[in-house]
Length: 84
Image 1 (cartoon, rainbow, N blue to C red):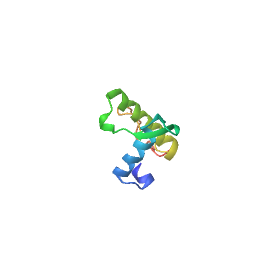
Image 2 (spheres, one colour; image 1 turned 90 degrees about the vertical axis):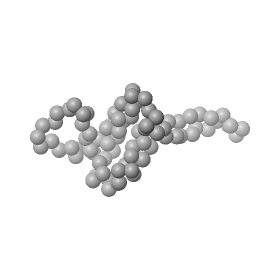
Image 3 (tube, one colour; image 1 turned 45 degrees about the vertical axis):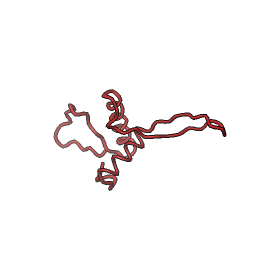
Image 4 (cartoon, rainbow, N blue to C red; image 1 turned 30 degrees about the vertical axis):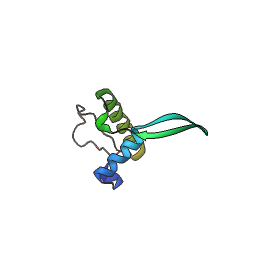
């Protein structure tokens, strides 16, 4: 993903957190109702939440930048092209 985007590890981590871990809250204010977005730290996610985050990262990567990220136990065979 870094080669494809040109981002550093820290920049890519920030992009993935924003694209795949953005939560919204609805707040009632004096001016009415507004929606606020926030990003949770991945370090604070529970195991199931982190697995969901990783799934969303894999989907985002494949759809948005055309890079397939296999599951840790996935055997792809020799010569598999990760850039779809």
